[in-house]
Each structure stands twice: as structure tokens, then as C-alpha cells.
Amino acid sequence: MRERILDELEKIEETENVKIVMAIESGSRAWGFASPDSDYDVRFIYVRVRQDYLKLEGIRDVIEWRLDETLDINGWDLKKTLQLLYKSNPTVFEWCASPIIYFERKEFAWLKEVLPQYFSVKRSLYHYLHMAEANYRTYLKGEEVRVKKYFYVLRPLLAAKWVIDRKSAPPMLFVELMEAELEDELRPEVLRLLEMKKEMPEMGWASKIQNINDYIEKELVEMKAIANAMEENRVDWEKLNELFFRMVE
Image 1 (tube, one colour):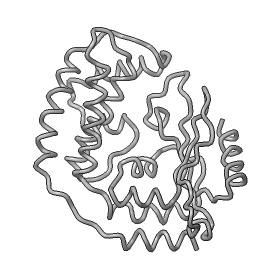
Image 2 (cartoon, rainbow, N blue to C red):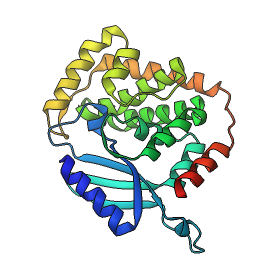
Image 3 (cartoon, helix red, strand yellow):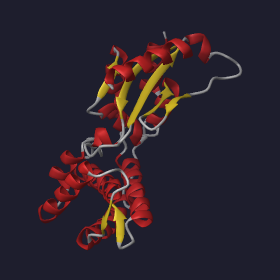
Image 4 (tube, rainbow, N blue to C red):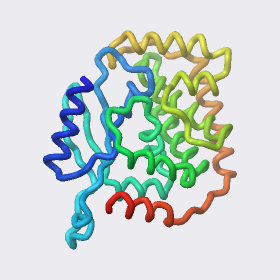
């Protein structure tokens, strides 16, 4: 599959006349709880030639290349990426922390150098709490639930706890988050769920686990109070402008 992905990335560069800075896995495979039938969520950052950024009509800042049962490939323009980084968008941090890197150029290292300066504890915390709460209320209220949805709640919940405790962007791998942030008494149950998730299809169902639901509700309330009391840090554009000019030129 890796060779197929690299072949698709090469086609993107040729067809779209762009240079791909990096390409990574962003979904359940990068989180460490893929099912046997999970697809590949390939995400990339690309840069265009300088003249394209000067066009009066503007340019599209997303390339949506492929979406089928196996591959989901799309990417962001460098300018869009840096504008989102200015706002401390957690997705940028996650892409740059993916444990599965399909392709990278030296510019990827330049990007990672500036990341810490634009990390906002408050914005990151709100992002993960909103994700956890939305998935919890939508998918985990019934007596029977899809097993994968527990991880779509627990992963952002534990990421939020990491942000509070360590004031840094959380790792992608769920096991790392679990070992660092999950209470000891819940680990056996969550590990059992993790093994179930890896062995069953994406649509697999199981009975609701009440003690995990209780834990989720308690943590959401406590962490939202912490987030509301936080102050926002302020940043400027200087380093991002420097990086943009450096990459484009």
C-alpha cells in the first residue's frame, strides 16, 4: 500500500504542479486502533510556485485527490496551513506528529521548528473537549454502541487531559495517551475494547460500558471548567511569514 500511496503523491505533484512538503497518515492507523477494514487517511501539505500566489483570481487551497473504499487522500496548501497554525489549529499539530510518514522533504523540518511557538493550550483544549463531547452525546448514549466510537471519545478526552497536564500538543498514538492520562482502574476495560476494535469490522457493535461513560461525563465537566478559566496567549505573524517566504522562494 505504501508504494501505491507514493505513486499517487507523485501523480499529484505532476498534475497539480505543486511540491509536496510532507504526507502522513491521519486516521485510525495513526492513532493505533485500526480495524481490519480501515481505510488509509493520507494527508499532505503542498506549496505552489510563487507566481500562483500572486494571481488576482486567487487559488484553491485544498487538493481533494482520491476517495474510495481504500484510500482517502487530500491536502492543504502551505498558506492555508500556516494561517491555521497561527490560530493554533490542532489538526496541523496532529499531522506533524503522525507516527506514519509516507513522504517528507527538508521543508517539513522547517515547519516543525516553528510549531511550539504557536501552540495554544486554551484553543487546543477547547478543540478536544468539543470533539469528545460531540461524539459522546451522538454515539454513546444508547444501550448498544459502535466500539470505534468509544475511541472517538476517549482519544480526544485523554488528549485534553494531556494538554492540561503538560501544556503541549498531545501525541497521536492512543496507547501513549492512555498510559500517560487514563486512570489505572479503567485500563483493563479500555485495553479489552482496544483489542475488540482491532479485530472487528469498522461497524462492530457492543454493549455500553457504564463505568467508562460515567468517567467520560465527569471528566468533561471538570475540564470544561478548567478551559473556561484559562487566559489566551498572543502570537504574531513574523515567524510564519518568514517560513512562508522561505518555502515559496
